[in-house]
Image 1 (cartoon, rainbow, N blue to C red):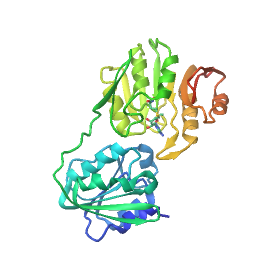
Image 2: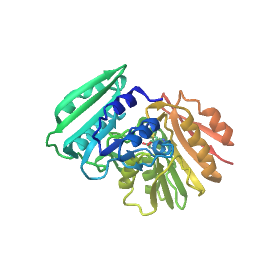
Image 3: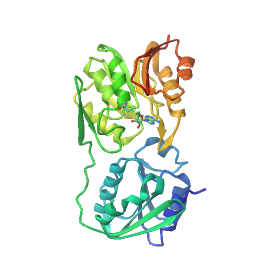
Image 4: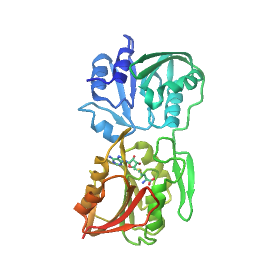
Length: 330
Ligand SMILES: C[S@@+](CC[C@H](N)C(=O)[O-])C[C@H]1O[C@@H](n2cnc3c(N)ncnc32)[C@H](O)[C@@H]1O
């Protein structure tokens, strides 16, 4: 069944869309119906797991689309507002003269508040609402400059280095408090160790291990934005590899250390399941006496999962709201 956002996007299609960009629509039913109606459809998602959920549909993992002109761009509201603005500016800069952008989302996620941004990008902006959702229909793009599509924001972490990020990456403006709590406890020496940063975001934990002598660093994340950012953060370390991966599913190697700040959302939905998969995967990927260093929000029920997989666990002091642990496989 289509979501209301999906219905709005499908109904807005009209007859004349020949080259359509489906950008982060993340709804297989909608994509199937679009494919049946449009000759040439390109589907891209930043997050690998959304492509995998695509039910046989062919899409590409990309943070931004291929550089070309589009007749119709269908876009779903992104969870990060600044990322959303950049996507809109990118679309405006890449539409054909008679091209259209259809941008939809839920009111509770802030879709209504995009009117001003859209009017700065397009001469004609209309909207249609249904239930708690809205679709903005935009025509006649104004001349706008293309937004940056590379990781160009940066923050410094004392004693570790520069973290390159961009909107849409986890905690892209500053070091996350959970990550900071974990950094406080991490070892200072990884000489000759093979280490994994699981869910690396912009790569702060991977950089910490690279900086402190790790023999080989692997960092994985399901988001293309995160992978690009972490690659830039780790650019000076030839022994570091950053890969797009769903919880390290495609890794077979054994690591001496896995470090992770566990995710608590799948897309925009809060979930425990993803953190549990991170813990299971860490156990699978660690060598026999390997260690998992982990931080998570303390309200989350990961204590039991950690105890199920790991023989020895140290619960370390952390600021209120966070749990930090070192778990040995044994
Ligand atoms: C809490 S953030 C931590 C990011 C980074 N390690 C830090 O400390 O700043 C969790 C990360 O897990 C990534 N993630 C979410 N689902 C994933 C999946 N299925 N596979 C791999 N990474 C995933 C997110 O994109 C996000 O970057």
